[in-house]
Length: 255
Image (cartoon, rainbow, N blue to C red; front, side, top):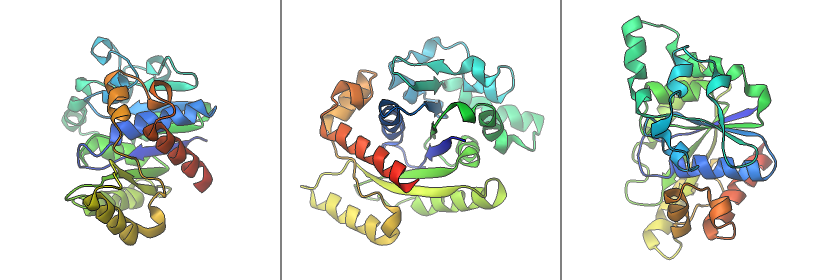
């Protein structure tokens, strides 16, 4: 069975999609078979791999509503070992779609679909939307673990309690295998005192659950995203690429 990791935090702009894309690319470059699932209606995970999601005729929406089989929608990317289950704005209507149908088991939809293909991949990475609603609950219910990115800025801990409460709820109600993979410090600059203070606070609060590597504030990461490339191919020797490769290896070491 594959390891299924959600990248989740209700706050936006903390590096969820950047982490999902680049962690997936790092695993793929190490020879692991990887599926990146975009559960954000903005579709930025696909854009981060250079895919025009606006032209997508079928997406994860069609998989979750049962109109398409998951194998028919998963697509290869230009990167070896890395496949994508794409998303676009249509996914934002999914909760309303099932609310109208009063579908009581809708929170385990993604979990049921993934079970059909999990043996084909070593890692399945899920990019969650910046909310703790229907789509994130589906993602967590389908996952074996969750990485929580925390930006090293003001109000970094804001909302973390809500994320943890949601994870605990999903663990008890839908997925007893779910655990916290780790808290990931993002946009870190050791020369900025606030960043150092926030990093120390997170490490003090979450201790061994915080990854030892911190993702730096690195212009190459932003450039790679804008160009639709993972950092592993855009600038493989940059600080951002080195950090994400270290994260991948740390996840592997944790088992």
